Length: 192
Image 1 (tube, rainbow, N blue to C red):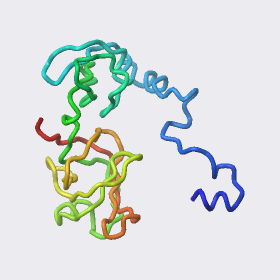
Image 2: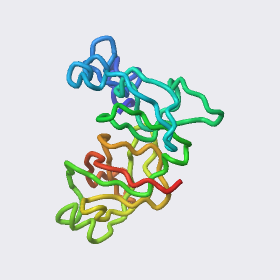
Image 3: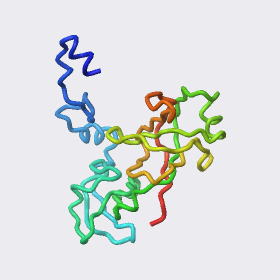
């Protein structure tokens, strides 16, 4: 796409990729989210997986699954956000291994693949490549019914799978071919 834009002399050919929300004033997405969900800006506790309260935060909207920087707590080993409990206003942290996910469930799916439906592809165990982060290469997995919902079983553990994020499914035999996708409804973590 960039080459085509450059060939046409378009200024956007050299524009950096954006991973942020383009319509948000001053690039501060928390301002918009705090207006829509003010309870997300309420202070709460940063809690270790083992139950220890390690510190306080200024609102769960400031954190994301997999985040390491900006936690402002130290226990010796690096800590990562492994879960966000908005109802209890808790940011749950733990070791990197706690981010490893073996499966995920999908909602609001859109299926373009060769099977009649994503449910049929799940029943058939259709192999797929799965992208759960825009900056990461897709990983191998297989469609399956997980906890009664369409989902993916990863061939190896995947990291940073977060409910609410988009999940795109590709054909392993033609990796540029999109089969469909949806939003991540839940993650089945590896045992730590």
